[in-house]
Image (cartoon, rainbow, N blue to C red; front, side, top):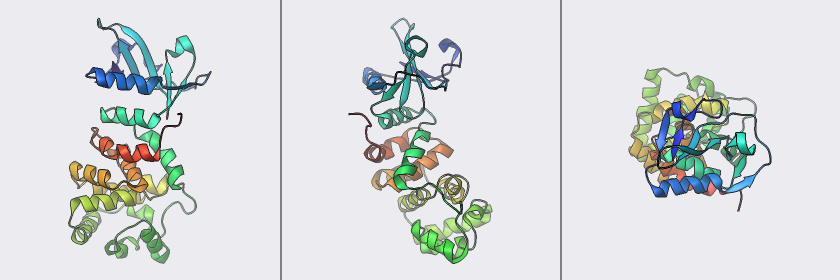
Length: 266
């Protein structure tokens, strides 16, 4: 079984880049189970999907293929069956693919987590400066040592700070929290409390991702595995959407995401 680039409009399967070839019977069986358990919709969506799962026989000939369509939908042989399958456990499938290094598998988690954690933005889109902004910083769990610096700017301006200003924030945070794992947990939780989309993607979120870039992947993974909260999980989703993941963070945050977003179909 292979997972290849592109959806139904990407041309012949033989000419596509192979993203991963599942290495053993256990992983092939897991992929088969995750992509065939669910209920048929009786219809197809308009998108072309992607990436595509390809089943081959021992000679390498294609037996069947299925395109991934959004969060929790798969189209097996759509030109033949003209039907989509709503998966029983989309969270498990996206985590399985992410753990095998398939890119962009955390994007489908953004909207359901925003619903669950009530993170949809209102007005204003960005945190204000001054006293109102300081209240927001406290609500977001930002260490008090950073309040004087951050309350002087809006959330939008925080995402545009200079390298020197970011280095100053990094030093203040390290002095207050010497543990790298501790800093990772603080930053991921802070990132996961930002409203979607403006603040989280372009405002304060941009600052936090710059601070996280200084931390080692094992420390980030330990923080994600040990701090099993919805906000840390959302922080990991935000981070991976911007910087990618080789499967390490997917495995670390997987238990939390499975708990937060359980199977939709029994």
